[in-house]
Structure formats: C-alpha cells, structure tokens
Image (cartoon, rainbow, N blue to C red; front, side, top):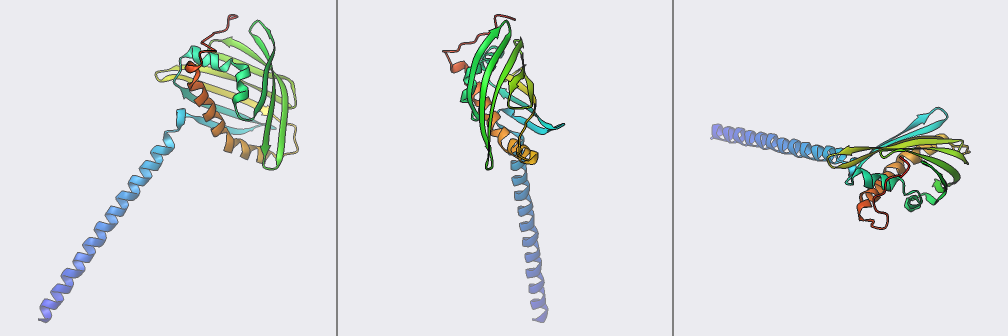
Length: 215
C-alpha cells in the first residue's frame, strides 16, 4: 500500500511537471506570436512612410519618404498645387504672388504651437520647378533665419515615391530640444496626412494632371 501511494504521488508529480512544461510552451508560443505581430505592425507603416528629424548645425533637418498610388504626373500636379497647401494643418495661408519661367514665389503663413509657445512664421518661398520629378525651394525672406529643401519623385511599381529633404533654422526663444520633440511627435502625422491627400490627386478633376509648360 505504501509503495502504491508513493507511485501514485510520483505519477501525479510527473503529470504536474508535464502540464507545467506544456503551459510554459504555450505561453512562449503566444509571446512569440504577439512579438511577431507587433514587429509586423511596426514595419508596415501607412504609405510606407519614413521620417527622420535631426539637428543640422544651429537648426534642424527633416528627411521624409512616402509612397502614394498615383502616377508621376499626378504626383507632380499635387506638389505644384501651391495654394492647395493651405489645406495641410499648420499652414494657414499659401498664395502664389509671382511666376517667372519655372520660378514660382509663394507667400506662406504657418501657425503652430509648441506646448504653450505659439509659433507664427511668415515667409516668401521661391520654388524652382527643376524637372517633372524635382522641385527645389528656398526662403527669400521671412521670419525663419533660413529654410530650404527639395522634393524628388521616383517611379514605383505601386505608384510614385515622394522624397523630401529640408533644413531650417529658427530665430526663437523656444528651447531647441522642445522644437525637436515637437517635430518628432508631429512630423509623422503631418506627412501621413500629406500622403493621404496626394493619394486622392487622381480624384481631383478640377486640377487635372498638368506638368509645367516651362520645362
């Protein structure tokens, strides 16, 4: 009887050990699946959007890339709809004030808020329509100390890839680390919205698909 009792306890212990090993295995598999799902979600960003914000001397640089399901002509029409840019959050006004050849001057007013610091920037930008796939711009005058950059369009099997690079320097009392924090937290939303609106370009019959006549 004593022997049978010991054997029963031994079998019971082995069963519990097997159940514990099985449970640990299930937990590990579930954790692995969750980890894989999170990694996949992180890798698949909307519009394949990639944004980098960093310091550049006394200012900042922003590098952006996103993919929109439009052809190059529609992408170019979207970029050169200068007055349509006022539909992007933060840009209060955007008005073409002069055009000579492939040089377009645009007056813009930007209003933002970094925590409790208001930002109001007025500038006159000159856009150079270099080609059907490249647009350069620089600030001629304005509240920023410096601002310049470019847009480049590249064909892709799923549409057109927009590549943007800009550097700017502000004259402000706002600490630079706060501006960097603001840019890092808002740039993704801003450019995701821009990519979404670029994707709707082919639906805008009032704009059509017009390339520059000066190229």
